[in-house]
Length: 352
Image (cartoon, rainbow, N blue to C red):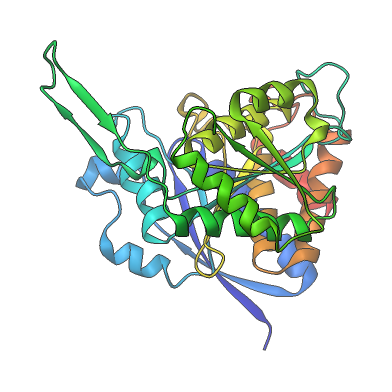
């Protein structure tokens, strides 16, 4: 019996269904070529469902998703839904309910892709951000007192547990060990000001690091790190950090690797169900026009395959994407690629 993977597919909002369609096109082609099967289950989640039913993610859907091998997500975000409802009700809930405690963001400049960093090429920009994904300020602990008055007090708690910090840091060390690169892990924090929460991160980083003597340990305050990401991105191999800092620096990483059109990420539960997605969001102004760049969604398929253990297929997807960026596209921007969304998907399939 061959290898079969059950993939939950969430097209979501805006251009999400369009880019997912191209990602699934590539997934079908590479699975046929390398000898595994995929069993796709679509899930109707996003702004349209919320507007119809008032639901974000029913409990029954959570239970179904727990039975998947992986989840493939297009985008969540609808202009007619108040900001925060879908993000908390769908994205954060899935991360928390499925315990996807790692957000993994490769930052890699591909051949033929423009970067805003002067004199930097693919050999300079190739690192990974490991972000803690279920704690920190995003845990949603806090409240408001005397709201709307001159005496209003707003409190947001930065939650950091020993368990949550250690499992994130340990994952980062293991990832650095397995990665064929510099074997260097940088902790990004702010220990000089956030002396309780980030002291925990620093202590755990040093303690766990004793088990990985072959890994070079590095530390950078977050404000210094964003400067170095722009000035000398080649000094980084793997960066591990908390939820908020990871959210910020991974978006900067997306820009220096050529923009959101090429940036993919994974929300990982190493022992459970993980979710893979393009980073760019729903981009509703481009929805239905067949002009959006699908390469980030296709790269997310590659990440998903690597996570599932299909590393040969993942490598073929990555090489095909690189071939397309190097030889075909005029730009990564929507409407300026020189090809339609579906044509770019066809180019990647042909490159396979």
